[in-house]
Image (cartoon, rainbow, N blue to C red; front, side, top):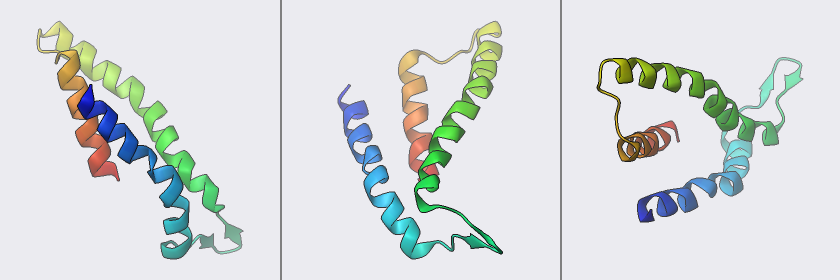
Amino acid sequence: MLITVLQSVSFYQLWNVGPLWTRQQVALDLGAFAFPCPGSNRSNSIASVAGVPLLLWIWRRQARKGREPNDLAKIAGALGWRRRAI
């Protein structure tokens, strides 16, 4: 539980710092189209929702072979994925 709490506290700071960093470091114009800075926060939510079917497919496939990871291993894997994504 402690690992998850510490990770979540640091991860959710991204919503405070992310837009500031994006405004300073990322070119938000693509020709005549200007990408809104607050829209950059949506990418994580979209990726999370889009990844659920893939993860369920992988875990069901592993379960049929008797190799599905336990709940703690799934949480640890997600923590590692989030760290690489940031």
